Image (cartoon, rainbow, N blue to C red):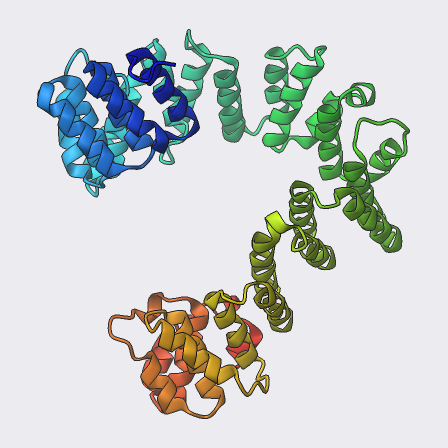
Length: 485
């Protein structure tokens, strides 16, 4: 490779733009300095925006403005940089001027529409949507893209949807994706699933298993599981793993557990043991066979081994089914996988909070603290739950004070210490700790508000306490937090 060769520099820049845009910036700058080509200048700015490096984007923009200050592309890229900086009104002003030109940059129309929707002016919002609807009448690629954008606009009326659907169906450049998009929206308007399936089948060669996979996946996405279950035959499903999974999902949603059981009992089905045992556990649960279901879950975890991807899948699956014990056991298994340990502990903490299980939360935090001794946030959370549960820890208050002394700006540490002081019958000291200028208590976390309300009441300030209490969503509090006041 020749490091000073422009083509080599440019190729390297393009490669890094795909892999890691932040590393590509140096090469785009070098390309500009070596060749001075306008396209490289454009790519430098675009890549800086992709890397979310606003400082570099402004540096590259200044270079472009020094050689072509009034060009359409310069003004367009300036609008993009301004938008990235949050200067929407200035960016919109540039786009409004450029949109009138015949030779506008390719991305300008949709940048303009985005900016109109970010305006606080409802008239400007409406002008942007009207412009988009006008674009959607075109029979070129721009018109098709406008139709796609309109499908994501939340303010479409039924009449608007009819026009959009017809546009997607009849546009000369429409692909199967667009036809399916039109069908899905038409189904939402009409609710006619039979007509939807009939039209969708015409877009696929259902004798081709790959095509059948795509159609089945699309039908499931529309929540038309009964149609998927009827469309795919048992013989077809057993030929491919992905097709079998799509079919089994449809059978599960339509409660065809006996059929699923029979399929899973077949030898040689295209499912790995992990998924087969997972499905079988669900079947036994639905059939009321709790003991057999538990045995299958054990087999699932054995087959998952230390594979974090499988274990996370199992956590999500068990949580969706409301299987609390299985979630806990699988999260615990994940904490034994080094690459997943921290994330697993954090997920376990969130899970126990959701279960309103303060003792379980405390136990998890105790385990977590054992591995992350230097993590002050973990220690603070552990001490907080210790105080909630009124554990008799002689050193707890001392540790909580040390956390505040090390970082007095952390409200979380102050709340933990305040709760400890409240438990130690030192409400006045707790109040001093929480009376920090600038804190908008109605905007902080509900459990922190609960502690503050309890401290206020303990100090006799019932009026302010009651006012703040009304802002607390009680359903988000642990039982011990509710009991504070």
